[in-house]
Image 1 (cartoon, rainbow, N blue to C red):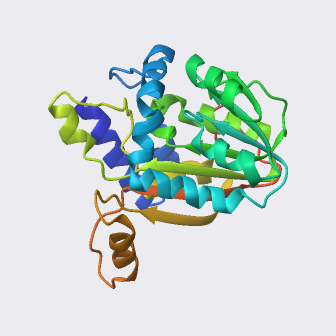
Image 2: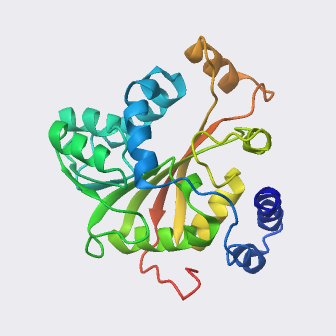
Length: 263
C-alpha cells in the first residue's frame, strides 16, 4: 500500500522536472493494492449515490459548471462512468447534444435506459465499444482515480481513438482527500486507486495527446458553500486547498500512440 503513495510522489516530482520518460516508466508495474472497482461494487454504490451525491454542494456545483459549458453545444457526447445520470438528466431537457453513456454498473445502465434520453451500454473504459472518431465530446468525471496506474494510458488511448480530432474531453478528479491517512485506518469508501495532483493529471494528458483549454478548481464546504467558495476565489492568499479539479481539453489532430501509450 505504501508504494502506491510513494509512486505518486515520485510522479509529481518527475513531472515538475519535466522528466517525461521517467515519469511514463512509473506506470509499467502492476499496483499491488485491493481493487474493489467491480460491477457488483458499483451496482451497490449507484443505489447509495442516487440521492447522497445531490446533497453534496461541491458535486452539484461540478454538475452545474459542466452543464453550463455543454448546454448550447451540438454533436455526439459520450459520458464514461455516468453513474446516477444527473448530468444527462439536465442535458436531456435543453441541450441539442446526442447523448451516449457507458458504465460498468448494470443498474446504472438499466436506470438510464428507463429514465433518460440517449443510448446507454454496459462496458468499461479499456475497450470502448464505438467506432473511431465517433464523438465530439467525451466526459470522464471522477473515474480516473479508480483506474490502476498501469492501465490509465490504455484508457487515454481508447478515449483518443473514439474522440474526433479537435474534439473535447472533460475530466474531473478529486484532490487533497487524505486518502493515505484513510487507508492507514483501513478506509477507502470510494475505492480510489490514485492520489492525483493537478500536475500528474496534466502530464498524463499531455503525453496522451491532449491540450488544456481551461481548468477550474473547487473546494468542499459542508455549510455556506457559495459564500465560502466566493471568499476562496477572491482571496489573494490560499485559504483552503482545492478538493476538485475540472479540466477541459482538446484532442490534438492526428494523435497517434506507440505501444507504450505515448502520443
